[in-house]
Amino acid sequence: AQRVTQPEKLLSVFKGAPVELKCNYSYSGSPELFWYVQYSRQRLQLLLRHISRESIKGFTADLNKGETSFHLKKPFAQEEDSAMYYCALSGGGSQGNLIFGKGTKLSVKP
Amino acid sequence: NAGVMQNPRHLVRRRGQEARLRCSPMKGHSHVYWYRQLPEEGLKFMVYLQKENIIDESGMPKERFSAEFPKEGPSILRIQQVVRGDSAAYFCASSRQGMDTEAFFGQGTRLTVV
Image (tube, rainbow over all chains, first blue to last red; front, side):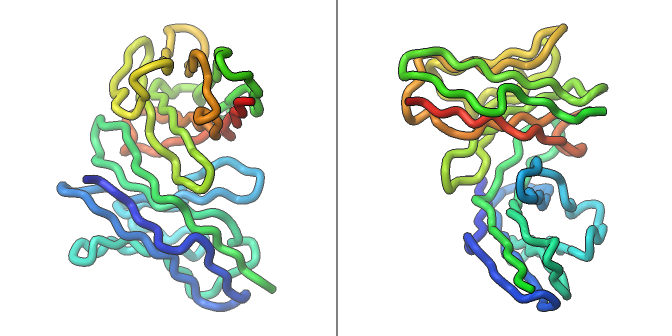
């Protein structure tokens, strides 16, 4: 079964500390993986996707097919990074179906 | 471009009433997706539509729920005879092509059934 697991509901770190938001997936084919972010009172927006290999706002995520993981990392957290983060996967193509994890709330303290 | 617009933002219905949720995609987007988020849960896919066609409704409950995306006007998610368990946030997203291109989300409609 296709599934995305984000084991942490809440992650709290201090400003300047490294951050790693965990995401594991279960998918039989070649999935596309995404991270979405939702800042307070704002809409869900795409943060990054594995195929683009970009670094957005200092965040990176590497797809590890062996461990079926797509963890989101940032070396130095900022207070403005506080938000809900959702990992999602897609079978790609015309499936039009994103499978989301339950989300991790990141709280960056001053 | 105002982004994906959903209305109403909040909707209260009594049990047994009908709920209609509207979604206007971004300009130039012909693909629309509806997701439901129950409390403490992630977003769950419901249905994927292109103009006048339902492409994938594998996430839609078999009864009481329907969706359309007419040639003109917004996409509508309709829930008939609402029950308390339908209380959730309903999100719409749109994309220019399929979901492997970037999808943009609306702010959601929070449905409360009393």
